[in-house]
Image (cartoon, rainbow, N blue to C red):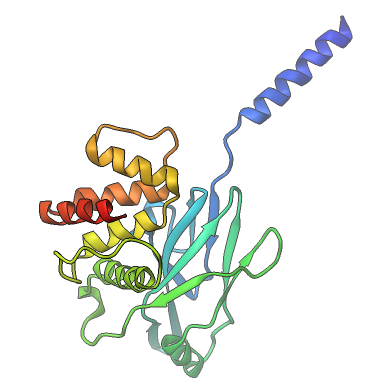
Length: 243
């Protein structure tokens, strides 16, 4: 009986342990940087300016160099343009942005122009590959800029260039090149696998449809479809017919 009870206790312990959900992936930056957006949403919805938790899968994270230096009674703030990072997260991944310590004005000025950093997997200790783009510098007050729209346009432009050299469907000629919603729908559709593409098509026909397993590609495709006007939605459906 003792053995039986002991075995039962072990089974219950293992069952409880295996029932625990997988930990979210994490992305962290040093205090000389800030996390601005995660998949175009404010980083504060995910945590704070320096560390965020995300689900497993691909994510677009926008960061920028943001350093305050104090000398005597004077304070200077140095900010780079936002940098768009395309990162792939596995379950329980912990990625850290590593940057050199900045202590002088000249170092800060250099990093405003071209931020120096790498991204390291804290579990393996190895640097990882990633893609980055940097917004174009603009004059005027930075707090009046619509960074989300700028990132949308930058990402959409990249996706169009990629589509032009791929075997994917052509861009619908009925829309102008500045149609961000159409471009983003095409981008996320082209990033999807066959199952997700089928789910997107079914959802367009029936917006109450929910796939058994969702994905960032499906969520972003439906997000941009809902955001688009009727003309853009029709253009996207015409584009799908050519696929």
